[in-house]
Image (cartoon, rainbow, N blue to C red; front, side, top):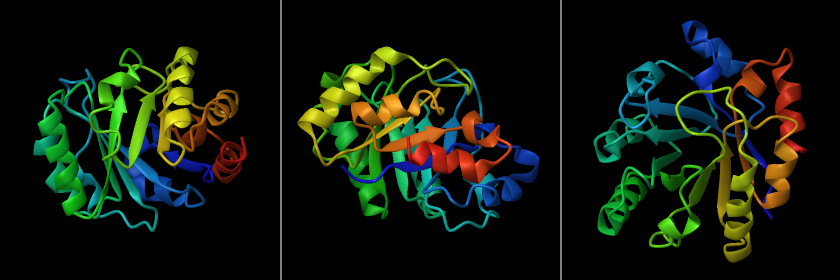
Length: 212
């Protein structure tokens, strides 16, 4: 399996000094930006304009927790997003999913599809061979600091068994206790928010997650 990538989520960062916060996690592999519209999830967060002044060499991983992801893709392609992930629950039509994936790929980014804890792997089989990443949510999306849902690990095991080369990302409640479980199940991209931005030594926290 590929090496474990660690992806800090700026959902738990101090947005009043975002550049400093991002600079503090430069030993990570990616930076995740959680985009929420207040409809698909109850919380409301930022868009691409907040990121335009940020300087980082880390690839930007955009997690769209929005009802209409097609309306938000272009703004993040324009700032050079590395990966853009949309939710299976927001886009249920196969053609619409494939069109979104094609738009993301044409814009120069990789494409991911996310599944909430209650969504089965079978729900994304229509595009599993076209996406570059599957994000398995281990909490209900919307807020950081939630308790890890262990039952979703079975979905990770199933995905890894059937798709040995797939990038499988896990997000929600990932910390030093749950990260080894994620890796053992088959995840190779760990998103952590409070476990990193809440740590006194962020480089150490990142390294510990990477070697979980």
